[in-house]
Image (cartoon, rainbow, N blue to C red; front, side, top):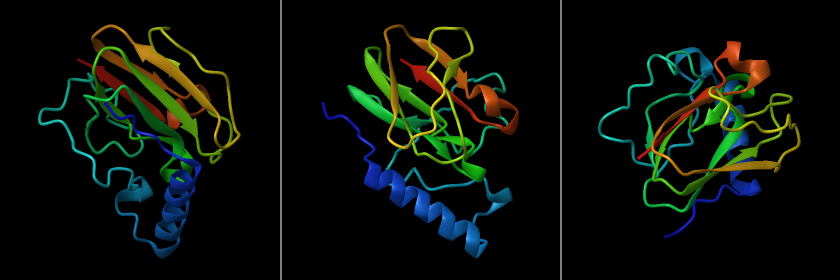
Length: 158
């Protein structure tokens, strides 16, 4: 199996693309959209997140990353850098999710709503936090200082 890696170069490319789109007014509905989905497939049937992602920045669907040993979610993307990219993913049990900070939007952290994991507050580009999902289920998480701004995500473990 191959691991999906987000490099600093791709994070910077993403960040610059967002900035250009924002300046040109091409961001669409309220400026919350960003393109971290190029080449990605969404799951056919969206999991029931019980409304958790209804106001999440950049949530366009659940990205299907099953079959991967390790995947990377960006921290600090989207509208005013207050989102996770992608906001929702599906992975297999035993997959390690690595959250990588873009360095945008101030300090962020990653906090599981049920207490399974919590990262330290980070601001520096390239910092990472990882968690291996050993049990099936839906895990919801947020950035503590920016949850009220829609900085929320979910991991659907199958």
